[in-house]
Amino acid sequence: KPKPYIYTLIATQMVVKPEECIVIEDSDAGVIAGADAGMAVVAVPNRFTTEHDFSKAKAVLKGFNGMTFAKLSNLASLSN
Image 1 (cartoon, rainbow, N blue to C red):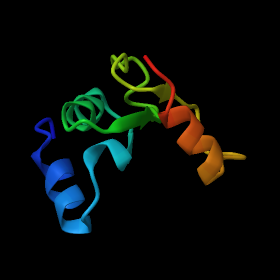
Image 2 (spheres, rainbow, N blue to C red; image 1 turned 180 degrees about the vertical axis):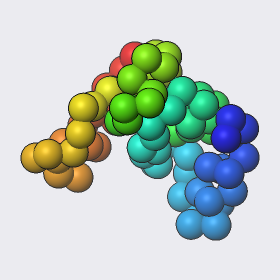
Image 3 (cartoon, one colour; image 1 turned 135 degrees about the vertical axis):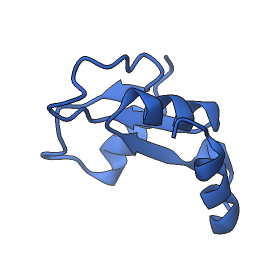
């Protein structure tokens, strides 16, 4: 972070397209890197990052209670 290359490298190694990936991040730098890599980003701020700018995230969550892959996938597909 904050460069997107780590996300694109991992996607390449996993043989998946960036647009098929969901990045889960807790900081603005991570959200920016994931979005710049062309991936959907869901932000889950921690107590130190609650005031960060998460405007590039598809969604911002308070936590993962009750989260399923289907719900996460739906959040990631929302348009900004």
